[in-house]
Structures are given as C-alpha cells and as structure tokens.
Length: 338
Image 1 (cartoon, helix red, strand yellow):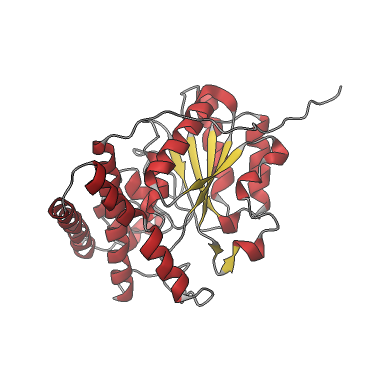
Image 2 (cartoon, rainbow, N blue to C red; image 1 turned 180 degrees about the vertical axis):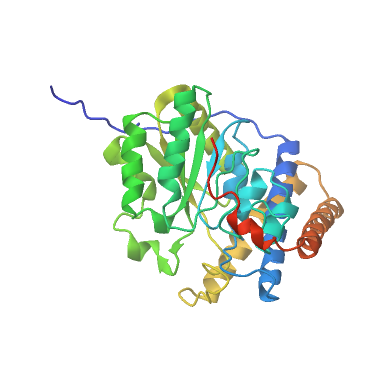
C-alpha cells in the first residue's frame, strides 16, 4: 500500500485579531518586567549572589510576550535554559523566580534547581532545560498528553537556532506530524547559537522550513515587534487547536547580552549590537506606539517603569532574605509517588 506524501501548507494561517490600547499597555508592562528583572539578575550575578550559569533574555522580550498572549488556561509551555522571560510571561511570581536564581528556599524549586530548572504546574510551565534541544521531545510529550486527554490544550515548545541541528528535534518533528499533535515549535532565532552565527552553522538559514520533510508548515516572523508576534501567532494557535497538527514559528529576534553571563560576545561587533538597540528595540518601539496610538505620555510611561522597578527590587530583596535550603532537601522530591 502506497503512503501518501504529506506536504506543508503553502500559506500560513491568518487571524484578524484586534489589538486594543489596553493590550498594548499589558504587553509593555510584561516586556518591561522581563527587561528590568533580567538587568537585576545580571547585577546579582556580578555580586556573586547567583551562581552557576545565567542566560539573560534581554532583547527577545517581544517573542514570549506576544506568543503567550495567545495562550489559553490549561496550555503548556516548555523551553531551554534562557528561560526567565518565559516564567514571567506565564505570570510566575518574580519573587519565586529570583529566589530560585539565588538558590534560596523561597524559590520555585526550593533553591535546588537554579536558573535552568524551575517549574510551575499551576502555570503550566515545565522548565527550563539545560541540555540543548532536550526540551523538544519533552514538549512533544506534553502535546501528546493534551491530545490523549482531549483537553483542547496546546503546547508552546521554545528552542533556539542553535538547537535546530539536534537529532532529537527531528525525531520529535516526525512523531508530532505522524500523530498530529497540538504543538507549536517556536524557534527563537537570535542569530547566534552560543557564539556561532546562523550563517555559519545552518546550510539552510530559513529555519521555519526545517519541518517540511515531515509535512509541518512554518513561517518566519519579525520577533522584535510584539504586536506582529501576537497577530502572526494567533492564527497558528487557532489552526493547531483545531486539530491540524504541529506548526513551526521562526521568531527572528536578537539578544543583546552574551550567550551567558560568562560570554564576552567577541564574535560580533559593538556596532552591530548598538544598531539593533537603537533601531529595533522591542520595548522602545512599543513605547513610541503607546504614545502615538494609546494617548500615553512620557510621565505615564515613567510611572509604569517606576512600578516595575519596585516589583523587581522587592523580588531581589525577598530572594536575598530567603533562607538557604535545608541540607535534608537533597533527599526530597527525587521520585514521585503516584
């Protein structure tokens, strides 16, 4: 019996979602919270209060805020080690996130997980994973659970451009397509996999086409514009939720800092980073839009910034005052008693 070849959709799903001034304000607050939180995390790392690896999300805020604005309660999210922004975008408490970064008892993993291993069942956030590409088969499994339980949920599985060459990614694509799983693979293409540019590590730089061999459609999206991300993503989410199978979104974005806090980022010029900051910064551009379209003033925006800085300062204070884990915690939550 011959097998019919599956071809990806030639045109991407579209949505006529409208963005209100209140939506713009909410996106601005969420992105600014991520930016200020990450800046504070960088400071605490420099002070020696955060140990291990620390990968900041500065510059990429529009991606996760725009995508998660399309999510429904009960949807699930999983990502790699550049994960603080994703936690905050799913409304996880900044205090608990910062306390985990500093290895304190008040953290989401009781101080045992650190930056790369935080979870929240309540928010549907399943990590934070330190192995490159490891979240992709796990995210595919989350999507399988949605389909098996018939709960109409969708999984948002984030990965970087450096992870797309991992073999387990394509095993996952194959299974997701074969079983028509409700998963959106969000490739956050920030142009550099650790220190190697996409042009040097990918024979085909159009990463959204990586699923074509399995019949998975995909499209590239300007990931520096939160409104564009929201509009381009909503139609995809609706399409996947209707039972059409997986989809790949390549979010073209940019990170301002190094791969991690220990990376001096000498593989790119200061002029390149400066140009992106001055011309394409997602927060600055949304700030201008709020003033032009939502009637907000400079004073209004400064007040929001003041409130956000207060939230982050409170989170940092909570983290530093939270006690360290009891050594006995080493032996707890190793196995789940079902």
